[in-house]
Length: 255
Picture (cartoon, rainbow, N blue to C red):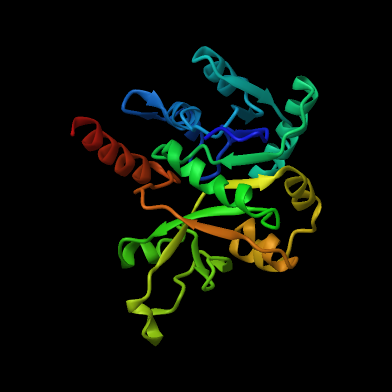
């Protein structure tokens, strides 16, 4: 499934999480969470290489210890996309090769599967007009729909994003119980030039209000293709999430 395009994965990671300090190296089944994300991402058939972008030497040392490539970035970045873009430029300078597609893979998605990355990249290979893709999956229950840590998304009939929110959307009050409740999964492929453009765009009011980066894309008039993933995945935002994910992964390991 290797493409003739230069496609890389970048995992932005930092220790100074406001909600969960030290999160990337928190242990899940005896392995740092970031290790799970990195090793699973490396199994993608479509990625030429995977890098971890970090401002923490501790993270860089760990990734190098397991044979991975770490790129040191500024400690001033607030958004993961900013760190990813800096890493992209440094990788191009180091390798002398221009990247065509960069997949931003959040370091708090330890349940990621390599085929999720491959399916997320597919629309970019099939349609030159698509600039950025997000994965999405179903919310299992009302508790997940009400959880502000789960970014909800609604899409049009062609699976382009209409809106993202940390609030429950669409509204259950008006009979939306029969509709699929969807969440964003943070595997986000960008065309190289669009990632650079995205980071130069001014932050937007809805992006700031919802604390969802992808709203900047929509507010500036661009489209986001959403791709459904059938795999069960949960991001880790706090200790409770970590325990939940570890329980699920232990069960899968023992099956």
